[in-house]
Image (cartoon, rainbow, N blue to C red; front, side, top):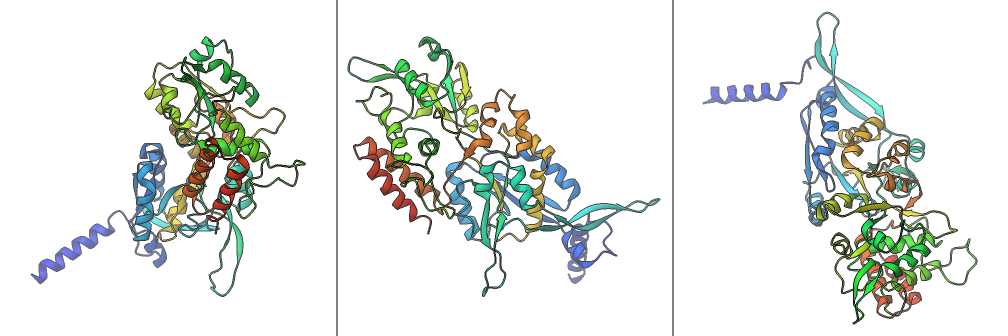
Length: 466
């Protein structure tokens, strides 16, 4: 029996070392770094096929690393992720939404200055032998990150954190908290047939034109019921990404949404403006007017179907949406005469757009942090990122790749808005922020003044920053 056990152990040891090459003369740290390891990667927006070429290339250089890639449904992802991280069975690399960065600061690690990983290498001239090399490589410098990526990425991913390893001291530094792939922006989908029937040759470029077109596109029956809507706009719960749209209107109107720490300022007049009331009041009133039956732009109400459902069924002419919704719209309405246009702006004001996207981060509890960052560093390489973007059909977060995307029929409109895109929430509970914004919208629809609703919302959101 002892002989059989010894033989089994010898076989298992041989299996474990297979594929490791010549390790006899290698330093101990190189041998350790070249041992087989599984890197767990969790996704929520793209499946493994988007990253397969990148994964294959990574494993050529690091054949000891297996990539366990899992994709989750959006509605289950956050609960699954938080539970797994709490129970020490979470991923090494995972996606977070751009508004989740503050919430996950204690669960993720900043990008290190350098990373150390084992590479497969070939030695010898006449007699070639496979071996391993332990390489120390720089990551991306902070100044390069700021220069190479869209401004909104810098706002969301560069954070000032305490990097001290001495609990008695503080060392606050600006650090990169993740790696972006694309930056999606809100644009205007439109039904060409409905615009043609109303005698509208082109979609609106500004909100004044949008309001005029709403009046031409809205149809009401003899009982005052809306039978054809211009767009899902004005309410909260049945408008896709209503919080984004209201935020965008406030920002376009000149509102400062937050301070450098992340505390809300959208209830105050920005110092640079000479006016009596914050721009956010006017923006919220403008938005909710479209759900007010007493206004000439009335086109929507809370009893109507979801805005996306209304659009794909041909009952709404416009839909405010993102690039990630394109495939869904095409699948739901393959015969729809679909058009895409930039989001309307406020005439005379600087162009502003809104970003909604995901970033890759590394778990603080990961025991393979250098490997995790080396895997993500591939996405900072333009050639690798371009292939991922081509498959994902998403606007680039990297500035140098945007020019070529402008001519793309599918993502061009969204890509054209990336450089002027913004986001604002930097707190620790993005779900609470969205709920509070929806309640703010609903309150005004139900008769509360915009002044009262905005101020109450700001007070509530301030509590999520603590």
